[in-house]
Image 1 (cartoon, helix red, strand yellow):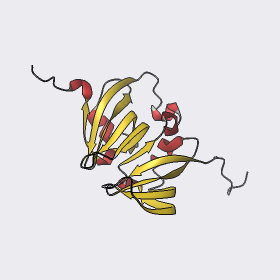
Image 2 (image 1 turned 45 degrees about the horizontal axis):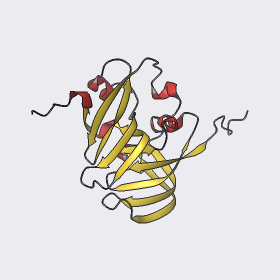
Image 3 (image 1 turned 180 degrees about the vertical axis):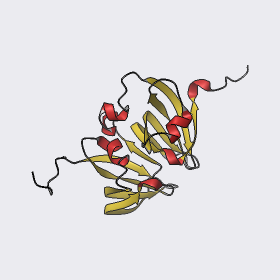
Image 4 (image 1 turned 45 degrees about the vertical axis):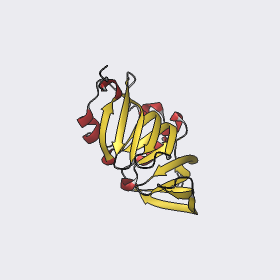
Length: 182
């Protein structure tokens, strides 16, 4: 095999990419490692969205522009919403190699968005470890709903969402909600 041929096969995956001011709907190119492998690849700091349709966050259904290709820095991406859980990547990669996991229903907030869904972790919930340890910049949330804080008509239901942990303001476990007094 020569050096200029890649052993990887690429495919396109439909995705919604959310930035602070725009929603970009298009296709991202991934390998067999899925979207999680591509977003957490620390050798590349940018992502490309093909056949990209842009809408402003405050008017999420009004098309602003359409490009064959857009490029953005991963650090500026708040979330990437995917249709199916399987699109995140191989189960071993998504679960970081762990087979025994605990499901935690959670709410995550950023400056722009709220996300409710299920986070799968090995063992107990460790916020500090989740936010600071390891090399995974994007963490998966399953069966999730993303809503813009100031624009509630921007609502995306997704089998899997990858959120940028550097953009997270807080994570709350839904089972720790205070019950209203009667």
